[in-house]
Every structure is written in structure tokens, then in C-alpha cells.
Amino acid sequence: MKYKKLLINFFKKPFFVQIILLIALMGIIYFLKLSFDLSDSNTPNLATLVINFETEKRFFEGEVVKEMTMLDALSAAVSVGKIKLNYAIDESGNVNIKEIDGHTNGVNDKHFVFYLNSKKINMPDLNTSIVHGGDKIEIGFK
Image (cartoon, rainbow, N blue to C red; front, side):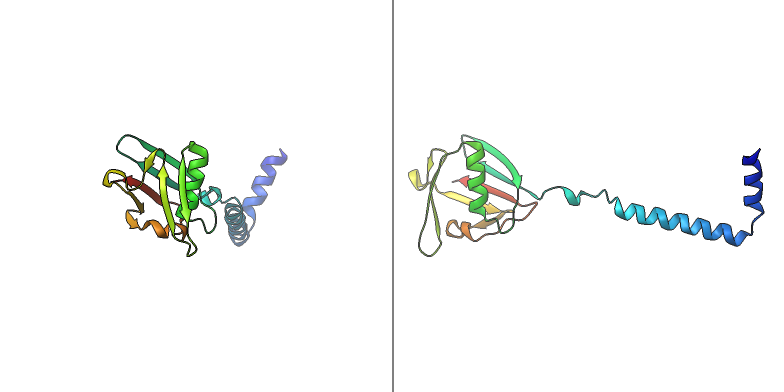
């Protein structure tokens, strides 16, 4: 009985009070929605590394950290994928990759080719080319 009486009393109140309650309820829902943001902002920024040689093709995906270079990404993939990497960095910071996974640079007139988002990157610049989340790094042997 009390429930029916409560409903009757609620609807007898002025229309203005009901509008204010409705607006307050919508405001609470709006603020709860903001605090429970379910977007992908908590997912890590991932980059993809593709090693595409004639005899093999390998894919790696990993989290990008601040100021990560293409050489850093390659080194991370090497440690996870058990790939042999032999490179040198001179006094100027230029990179010279000598070998990747049994393929030697310059043998039989074939050289490593590096791309960041389909844009060719020169080998000496691998230590200065910054990788961001969503980037795709490709390594070829042509």
C-alpha cells in the first residue's frame, strides 16, 4: 500500500520538480559515463616488424616505448624471435647492419632495405628514426 501511495504522491508534485529530478539523473549518468571511459586508451601502442626475405617471412608485434628507434625495435624482435643480428654503430651514430638471421649484407649484390610505413629509411638512419604506435617496419633483402 505504501508503494501505491508513494507513486500517487510523486505524480501529484509539480511538473517542475520532476523535470529537475530528470535533469539531475541525466547529469549523474553523464558523469558516471566519463569516469568509466571504456575506450582503448589503456591498450599499449603496438608496432609491427616484418622481416621479408626470399626464403622466409617473419612477423613481430610489440609495444612501443618513448623515443624508440627502428634499431631498438629490431633489437627487441631479435631477442624475442631468436634471430641473429650483427651490426655496428660508428662515432657519428650511423648504423651498419652486417647480418640478419643468416643473411649477410652485400653478398651476391643483395642488400638490406628498410621501410617505416612504406617510406624507405637509409640504414645509417635506423638509430634516429623514431617508431610510434601503429607503425609498420619492413625489412627486405634485395
